[in-house]
Length: 207
Image 1 (cartoon, helix red, strand yellow):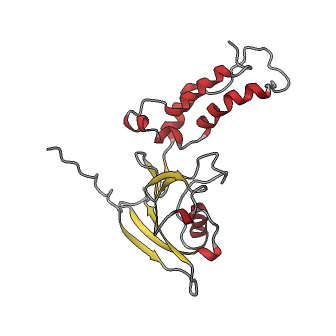
Image 2 (tube, rainbow, N blue to C red; image 1 turned 90 degrees about the vertical axis):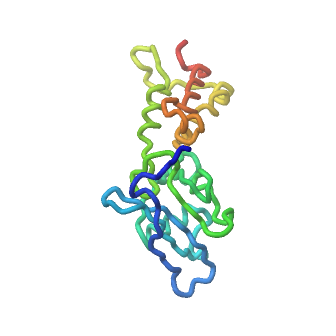
Image 3 (spheres, helix red, strand yellow; image 1 turned 180 degrees about the vertical axis):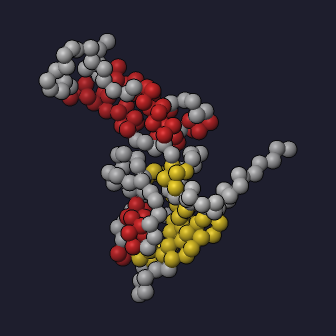
C-alpha cells in the first residue's frame, strides 16, 4: 500500500486568535492561512473575529479590514470587480474570488487558504509565474504585418467583437489556468489560455 506524507514543516498549526473589538455584537470568525518563507515555522491558521457592522459585504472587504486594522497578512487584490482574478483563493473549500464571495454565503466560520496545487510565496499569495509563462508562450496578442504601424488603433466591427469577447475573458482571469483540472494533473498544458486561439476570429488578425 502506498504511503504519503506531507513535507517537513508543511502541516498547518493553530495560530493566534484575535478577538473582536470590545462592544462588537455582530461578529464572524475568519480563519486565515499564514506562512512566511523567512523562517522555518510551520504554516499557521490565525483566527480573527470581525465586526460585520463595520465591514463591507464581501470576503475581500473583511480581509482588507483585517490587514489594515489587526494584522498585515499578505494577499493579492486589484480590480474588485471579478475581472482580473488577483484575489483568487480557496474560501470555504471552494476556489473563488474574494471580491465576489459574499460573507453571508458562508455558513459558519470563514476558512481561507491560498489556491491549492500551487507554490505559495507568502500567506495567501500563490506563485503564478508558471501560469503566466504558459500564457506568454501562446502569444495571445494581435500580430500585424503592416509596416509601418498605423498611427491609430485598428477599429473592430461591433458584431465581430462579440464573437471574440468570451475568448478574451477566459485568457484574462489569472485564476483560470492554474485551476483547470488538466493543468493540475499535467502542468505542461497551457489551459484556458489556449482560448487565445480565438484571435483567429478577430478581423484585425492577418490570415
